[in-house]
Image (cartoon, rainbow, N blue to C red; front, side, top):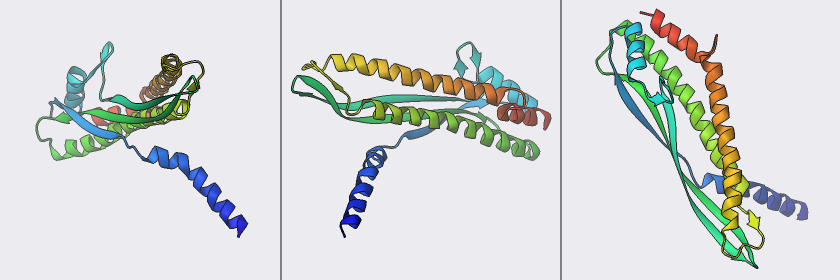
Amino acid sequence: MLRIHLYLLLAALVALPVTAHAQWKPVEKVETYAISGQSGPELYRSIGENGPNVGVARAIAHTNFKLTWTRDYQARAGACVLVSAKPKLIITYTLPSPSAPLPPSIQKNWEVFLAGVSAHEKVHGATIVDMVRKIEAATVGLTVADDPKCSKIRTEMTTRLSALSQAQRQASRDFDRVELGPGGNLQKLILALVNGG
């Protein structure tokens, strides 16, 4: 009987972090930009002219996010503790959308292309969610000594968050490099769209 109680207690303790993470979910939105054309090459050319600006070039699609936090800092015996942090994450996927109906054969090719591009962007969304969960893990419970006004803790958090943010951006760039590189999934999708009619 004692063994069963210990097992149940252990199971409950193991489930605590999962429960804490399960309390929030990202909001995902899709926005579109208009493109024109009645063939694969025309559609892809329009994407190049109208796609979202990302740095010095235009992209086929883009994933962006807005992240805000509700944090509970508490002064305890001269130290400051981040007791809880609840994120509000809004992920926005920007995808191309033809402004006019397409011929049936082109429509089929377009649907395959768009499904592949959407799946690619969802991977970017997943890396953003993963980053937010890592921020939670790295900051909730953080204690900074000799910080009764909870000012030093913010500097420490900025350092931790910067490293996690940079890691997410690098992972995103690495993923794009593979996907757009020779034999990469996005490269194949582009070639299939352009060569398909």
